[in-house]
Length: 255
Ligand SMILES: Nc1ncnc2c1ncn2[C@@H]1O[C@H](COP(=O)(O)OP(=O)(O)OP(=O)(O)O)[C@@H](O)[C@H]1O
Ligand SMILES: [Mg+2]
Image (cartoon, rainbow, N blue to C red; front, side, top):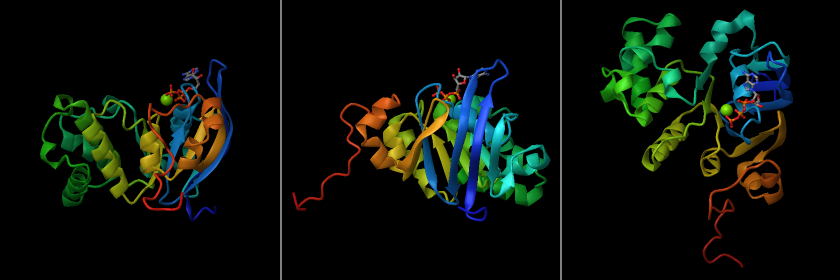
């Protein structure tokens, strides 16, 4: 994949935390513009560690990360932070202003947008997640699912090159989970989604990566990976009871 078509390129990424614990051992993959990819793997596999490298929150290991051809590093940090929108698992890590409107305006305003242009950007982002009627509410008065949507809006307002979500469906009720899926599907943006919710990965992401013990153990079609019992067992991945990842047989089709 060349730099023009890749939203994200990770090459030879290895990283040890300051206490000496090595979390990533040479990770390589690329994501083309417009792709939606799930990042699967058991607890402790290194998923969050990898995500925190995508906009330079963590650095100092070896290897490279490039976003739309631009290397993640001190030199381009402001631009990288605009291009990589990370929705953290806990929306409270992301919302800190007195109103929803101010939270969504925060990033674009810091990037220099103002006046009617800024207002329009905020309105559009809130409309895309169905939260336009909550603009004047304090974020801490909203429900968890509503805060998750606002967190997504704060990131969309930056018009990112790639949207990275850490466990987007966790703690959502079934209707909110489905509504967030509809939102993600409607976006015309590259998505990398960390999830333990395997049916969600299958529904939203044609391709998945399995990260296990700090290396990419598999990279392929989500349906094929989830149907590979041996692969799943080897990496502590379990489908929910009764869930069959294989496509349903076509009614009236050949046996
Ligand atoms: N600040 C830290 N210092 C030292 N080790 C850490 C630190 N943060 C994480 N680790 C270790 O790095 C490894 C990868 O952790 P990470 O949080 O990236 O896993 P994960 O795949 O996101 O797991 P989960 O599914 O539980 O969220 C784990 O063994 C973890 O104990
Ligand atoms: Mg994690």
